[in-house]
Length: 307
Image (cartoon, rainbow, N blue to C red; front, side, top):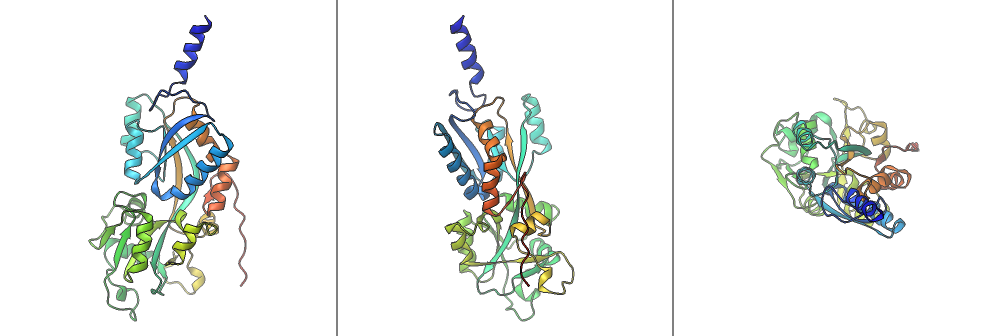
């Protein structure tokens, strides 16, 4: 009878997705799939989690958003980190499998626009942003009569990334991106391209430029300028333009905001559930706060700037 009980416990603890290795919320091994935009912050989460729980091993695969969601559908991983919830087609796929994924909001992020250091006109209205990404504006001279008549080059981190989808869905209202749009192979390469090409405008997740205590963030900010955006049609002062700082993300005044979710298909309390709970809990949310993003379950202290 004891042997039968042990077997029952082992079977119930087997992973319904991936390997059959026995694990618990704080021990074992798991691979997760993460929107590559959030590599810096998830690396910090994994490092802290594994230091707290020495028998836990979390491996993160950083990929474009489209591949991340496909990993979840294909049962390659137990949970993913993404900037959108499930589509109707994805929900139907899980319904056929009789699986109800758990969705947990963990942060508020933003999409930043970056320019070459020599491009001093670092402010745009939302209308100008729309015109650039729909192809109505294709030259810098259309934005500023004193600027050179040079073509604008739009650059994303990846053609299948969450940032490109965000622009198409939220800014272009499903209209396609113009012909002057290109994709880099990574966020680092994107920053390098913008730093070397005067006429480019890059689109990057705020996570890569928000943690000013991080050496990678510092090196990125030394190479490029970050665009301030105004929702007003005719801004009257510099104060009408806001950059993607944490306070403006929290207040909702920065217009290119988006939410970050963990989507889990784990059917039991395994390591995936434990790590997801850690990120959504106090310690994980403090890591998000320090990174410069807005935690989902922790208030952000707004500090007034001296005039």
